[in-house]
Image 1 (cartoon, rainbow, N blue to C red):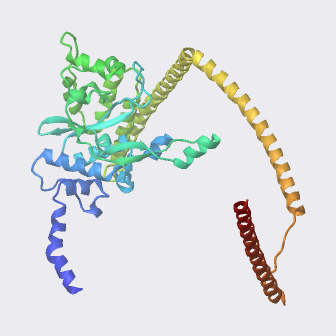
Image 2: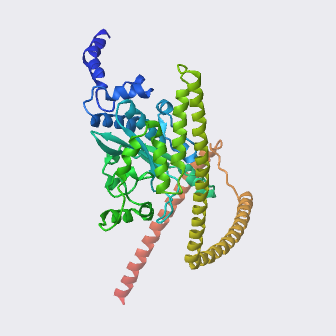
Image 3: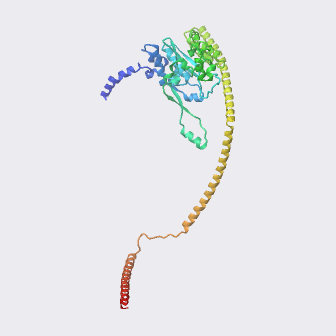
Length: 448
C-alpha cells in the first residue's frame, strides 16, 4: 500500500498540479466564487484570446441549461453566485456569468439582449420582447460574438414511452417534457457577424458589429430576407458600430441603460432592456450605499438615487407588461386566424373524415352485437358439453388383475390353441378329400 502511495505522489501529483493550467480547467473548490474562478481560469495565460477561450470552455462544460424552469416559465438563477452553486441557468444566466468572469479577468465584455426565432415563430410575425441573451468580448481590440448557451448543447424531447402508450390506448393527455443534451458547438464561439445575424438579432443595433445594420423588418420576414438585405448594394443603412463608443464612454453599471434606450429606438414594442438596465443600475447604487465607510449624507444621497432608479425601472416594467399583453394578443389573434384558415382549407377532408368516423361507429356497434351473439352461443355450447360429459359412459379398468384371472386366461388360451389345431387338422383332411375327388374324376374320364 505504501508503494502505491509513493507511485501516486511521484507520477500523478505533478499532473494534478498542472491540470489548472489547461484551458477551461480550474480547481473544484475555487469554482464557487466568480472572482476566484476567473483568476484560476486566466492566470498565467498570455493574451485575451486564450483567456476568453478558457472562460468559454469552462462555462460550456460545467453549466447546464435549466430546462425545467424554462418550461414552467419561472425565473432561473441570474446571480453568478447562485449559478455557480447550482450549475444551472437559462440564457440570461449564461450571459451574466460569462460577463462577470470576463470582468474579473480584466477583459472588456458586454451582455447582449436580443431576438432569436422561437419554435412557434412563423414568417412575418412581429417581434416584441427580446427572448435571448449572449455576449460580446473585446479580444485584442476587436469585438467577438459568443453565445455560450447555444454552444453548450441543445434541448431534446424525452422519450416518455409510458405516457405515450397511455395516450394511444386510453386517450390520457400528457405534457411533453424535454431534457438538456450537453454537446459543445464551437460555431457560436467568435462567429462572424454576417453569419450570426441570421439567427441572432441584437435589440441594440450596435452589437450586430456590421457596417450596415440589419433592420428588424428584414429579420422578421425570414433569414433569407436578411441574407438578401446584406447582399444588396443599393440600400441605405446606418452603421451600428458608431454607437459603440457612446456605450463604452458610460460607466459599466449604466451600459444596459444606454443600450435599452437604443433598443426602444430600434423597436418601439420592447421596453424590457431599459427596464432591466435601470434595475441593474439601482442594484449597483444600493451596493455602494451599503458601504459603512461613507458618511451619512453620501449614503442618503445614494439611497435616494436608488429609489429614483427603481421608479424608472418600475415605469418601464409597466410598459414591458403592456408589450407582453400586446404580444399575447397578437399571437392569439394569429393562432385564431391560422386555425380558421386550416379549417377552411381542410373542410372537404374534415367532412370525409366525419363520414368515415360515422361508418366506423356503425361497424363497431354491429361488431359488438355480433360478439354478443357469439358469446351467447359459446355459453350454450359450453353447457351442452358439460351435460354430455356427465351422461357419457365411462369404462373403468382395474389397475391390478383380480385373483384367479391369470389362471382363467391361460385356460382360455389353451382351449383356443386346441381349437386352432383341430381346425388345421380338419382343413388338411378337407384338402385330401378334394384331391382324391379330382383324381377319381380323371380316372373316370380315361375309362370312358
